[in-house]
Image (tube, rainbow, N blue to C red):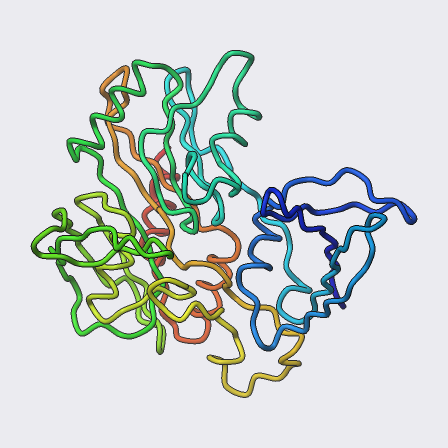
Length: 338
C-alpha cells in the first residue's frame, strides 16, 4: 500500500505547492504547509521506498510525483489542535507537533497554530495574542490571550516566571539519577540550523529541573520543569546530561522509533513498518497559571497525542513501566470526588 502526493515547485517563492489533479488538468495549487506532508519531506529515511519521476503538471512546467511506501504509507493526518479551556479572556490549546505558535522569521511558510485557531474560534475582528512559545516540533499546551489586558497580564506572568510548566520527554538512555538540576547558561548559536549552545560567559541564565518518570529498557520518560524559558532549553539541557530526546533532528539522531527495534521476535515487513513515533518526543503536559482577570490559579493538562500515547502504551506493555501510571490514578480519584 502506498500514498502518492503530487506537487510542483514554485521557483520564485522557493516553496512547494500540493496539486490536485482532475484528469489531465491541475487544479487549486495550495501552499506546502500541511504538517503531515511536511514531515514526509523533512524526514525521509533509507527504508522508505520513494519513487520520483518527472511529470508535466502544466504545459512547459516540470513537476514531481512522490509515491511513498513503507513508513509514510500508513501515516494519517493528525488533529492539529484541540481546545483544553476557553473563556472571554483566554484560550488554552493542545497543539500537534509541527505547528508554530506564532509567526517565525526563520520559518515563514510553516503552518501556524494562531492562524488556525483564530479561524475556528474567533469572530470577525477578534484575534488571539501569543504570550509564550513552545518549539514547533513540541506538542502540548499553549495559552493565548483574547484581549489586550489578558495579553499584558499573561505576558508579565511568563516574564516574571510565575507560570509552572511541566513537560514530558521520551529520551534515549537511562539516567543515573532520580532527580537532576541543570543550571547552565545558553545562547543562540547563530548557525543555519538555529541551534542553542551553552555559553558560561555570554549565555543567558537557564535552569531546568528533571525527574525520572519511568525506565523502559533503552529509553526513559523524563519530567522536565523549566524555570527559565530559553529556546530549546529542555532539549539542550538533556543533551548536556548525556540524554537526547527521541526523534530530535537537532540534538539527537532524528531517527524514528520502530517497534522492530525494541520488541523481541518481532515479525513483520521492515519496508512496510510504521514507526511508533516519527516526531520530537517532547510534550508540554501541564501548566499552572493565574487567570488574567480573576487571579484564580488554574491548572491545565494536555493528554498525550495519539502517536505519543501509542508509544507509551507499547513501551509500557514491553517493559512494564508507565510514566502516567500514578497520574492516571490521581485523575481517576479526582473524577470520583466530583
